[in-house]
Length: 116
Image (cartoon, rainbow, N blue to C red; front, side):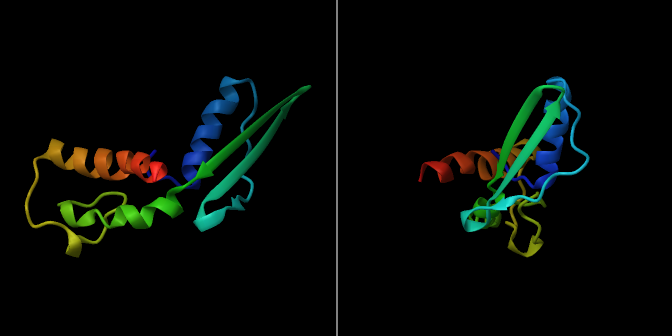
């Protein structure tokens, strides 16, 4: 859940591979394009006679346009909302703004989006 890009895939692979006894790749392979702009990363790692296959899907190109429609109700810049012209003029308390922008709009909206 949340907005991700290739750096998210790289970070996950660089944590997972050593934890399982594999050397992480020096570079990610080019992703396979999926419907609506999503990307599938297929990583194969080999260590003596063992193989590790990691598949990671980046859905953010599919979900980000819908999430951007929620920017009218934020009052500060976030990973999705960068255009201050559409921000609400009302100020939110820090915790309220964080929960609205990062939890509700960026993460929990993915759950709703996937269910539809």
